[in-house]
Each structure stands twice: as structure tokens, then as C-alpha cells.
Image (tube, rainbow, N blue to C red; front, side, top):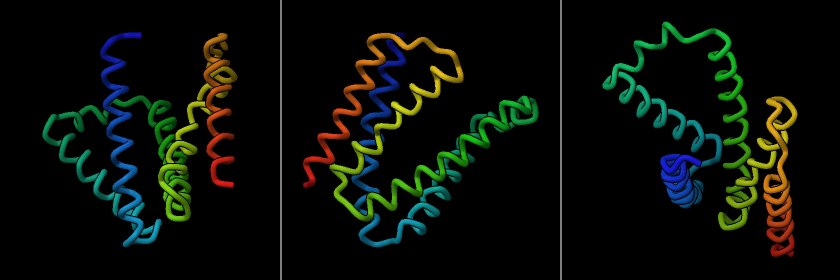
Length: 143
């Protein structure tokens, strides 16, 4: 894997891990629906500021229709996922919900193999097995 991909992956891990703590703290004051709405508004404002400042918004006119359509579907699924995440986080410990909801790469792996025709390697299968094992362990820890 490209070294910069590792760096960006680590940035994602640290950012999302820290964000989960703030999400849980937020849910002590706000309902999941209000928290999700405010987070989306804050995120939109930050992206707009960046887009305006960098000139990236000018490229919107040249975006291919199919790519925008896929992105719209991704946004809908992302919203559904965030709504489920906030609702789960509001009902249980962050130390259990965050790892469980972070098992989404298993779904991505299966869909990529089925629809993008990516190869299922032994390492990917082992990774999937470890994800399922981790989910089982987290579920059993709460009993």
C-alpha cells in the first residue's frame, strides 16, 4: 500500500476515534436527531468554507452525472448509518458501540467482491473472520 495511504488511514483512525468521544458527550445533552442535524450543518459549513476558499466549488459544473448519482446514494446511506450510530451510541457504551459500528469494512469487502469484482484473497477472508470474531467478543462482553 502507498505510504501516504497509511498516513491518511491513521489520520482517519485518530480523528474518528476522538470524534466518537465527543459524539457520546454530545448525546448527554442532545437527542440523536438534533445532534445528527447539527453535526451535518457544521460539516456542511466547514466543507463550504473549504470549497469556496480553495476554488474546488468551481469544479462542480464539470462533475459527471453518474458520479454525482453514486455520491448522492452514498450520502443517503451515510446519513442512515450516522442516524443508526447516534441512536446506538445514545443507548449503550461508546467503548462497545464504536467498535461494533466500525465493522462496516466487512460489508464493504463483501459488496466490493460481489459488485466491483475485486478478488477475495486469503488475507481479506482472514480479516473478515477477525471482524466477525471481534463483533462476537464485544457482544459476549456485555452479557
